[in-house]
Length: 88
Image (tube, rainbow, N blue to C red; front, side):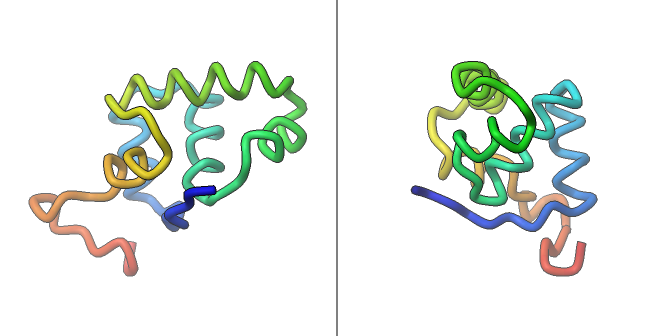
């Protein structure tokens, strides 16, 4: 399992909002970034695993990535944003 343990802070919420994610997709994305498995996400949100998989694919597509590690990198702030994720 690949996990980046990105802290869910204001800058992450802004990136998800800027990407145009619905509240549900943002919720799934936050849980992915926190390292939760798709099965755990499904159980926690009361969704079918196949639905979570579809949401994950939509999140990946929105960020132009195809795996969790690439998603972590895509969500991290760029140096141009001048954001310290540890302080956000």
